[in-house]
Image (cartoon, rainbow, N blue to C red):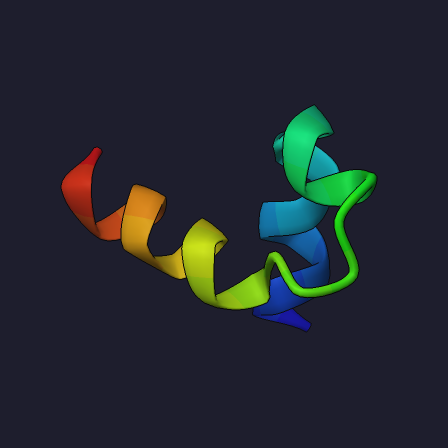
Length: 30
C-alpha cells in the first residue's frame, strides 16, 4: 500500500516499473 502511495506521488516513478526501490530512497532522503 505504501509503495502505491509513493509511486502516485512521484510522477517519474509512475512511468518506471522498477521504481519502487528508488521511491523508497527518495522518501527517506526527504
